[in-house]
Image (cartoon, rainbow, N blue to C red; front, side):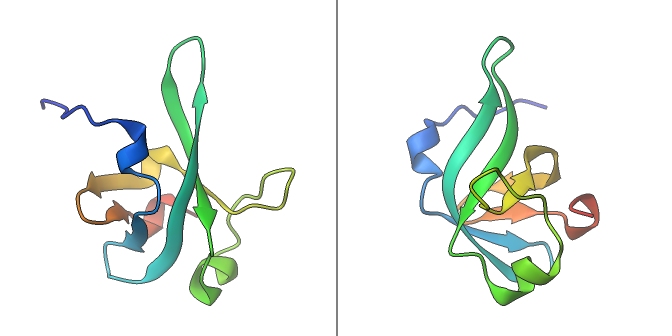
Length: 86
């Protein structure tokens, strides 16, 4: 599988949805491990009521976090697998 490289700024502000089309919020920021450069989590901006009910991990600043491992596609939206969120 070939990974397409995109600047991270292209992700900021994109709508995050589940594969089923449920809206979770927008990409506010990305957390990554600096040594390996591995993407760890997406920080949500304006999380929806649906996202709040999923019991997702929160940052120290009470921001909602999505594990990057749950991301299945990035295009007009950031699509995540809801099964991988829980």
